[in-house]
Image 1 (tube, rainbow, N blue to C red):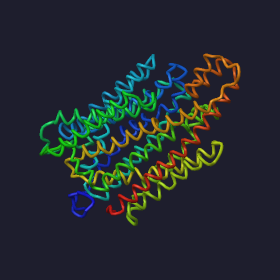
Image 2: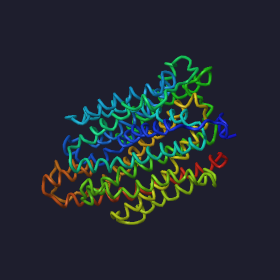
Image 3: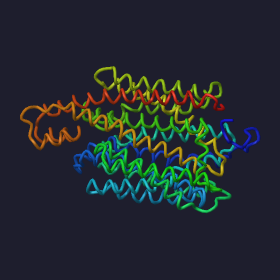
Image 4: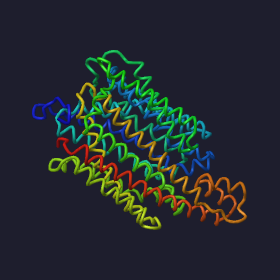
Length: 504
């Protein structure tokens, strides 16, 4: 038996028009949160020139948001199960809109990073609520799978649309517009949510386990911070201490959950192959997506010299492919096993990275083709993995299960920029050969990032410096693409092993 779904598909009540309208409203925060994960990819060059962040601060600008999300998702999912998922959704939407407005006008890199932390806090209240509400709104298995496909597609497409939205906004407005757009997007949710979305909560929630919440935050936060620290500063005593603390807290959390009569998270679910395997596929798929976007958006703007809007349009075919794949896989799994659908889809994603790794110079048409292939695999993998995760738990525990799913997503976003982005930065720095006579200040900036090299070259009027930086960056793209192909192949292998016996 691979799932614990207690509702027979032939007797479950079908969703009403109100539920489908509620789904449309719930897609707004899904799109917004996932867009916010990657929207800085295109805004980063402008932010670099305006706020002059260091290489470490650039990574924190991108990763602070998903890192905080990953730390708090399980906590907020559990709280939502208890106080009401719609209630915590509306609270989070209000806070997210306010902090987004503050981020839009941040005068320094430090304050912008702080705003990203605040967005992570409120974003953590939004994501578990959206997916867990679907679990209770759509009890019919076929309808629920379609609703989850729409949710997962919106989530993945939002990540891909981040650079597109950013490119359109940056073509006409200040970089702060990529944050300010959250306000009009969330207003319909705040106005219509109370009428279209039914409130739901755990009918027997028990007490809020403060000790379990604290342990989960230390475990997830410590793990995320240690990985981030190693990528930026290299391995040291601080990273080891954080990792040890995370391991100790994680062990304590598992023991506490096993002893609890009403655990906030049933850790026995991880022994179900379809559940744990789907989580791994979820995580590795997002690593591949965010890592790809991290270097491709910089290549298009800083190597190819394309305006932000033109660069964003290169990614549109990939967005369309991701939407189509996420929805079509619902029909595919009626006839083939979930494992085969996921492995087949991820095969396209492996090909995407292989094209950039083996194809020599990353031309614009090659990037467009590669992202379209990547989108085909990610769309299918996200739909199936989220469906398998949710159907493994009874509806009352949907918030906690949703939080676990989204924690994997957010850790994937962190790892995508931390591991693949860190690898790219390392190869870039080791491959950079500065022209003779380069201005010392410009040399320091160029060794930090490609964006720093572009700004220094413009300031000093040294085209040779920019050309050297572009060449070093492309060398990093080749190595990083090889690593990305390996990660996606690993995701496909995990899917084949763990989802072979999953129900259609």
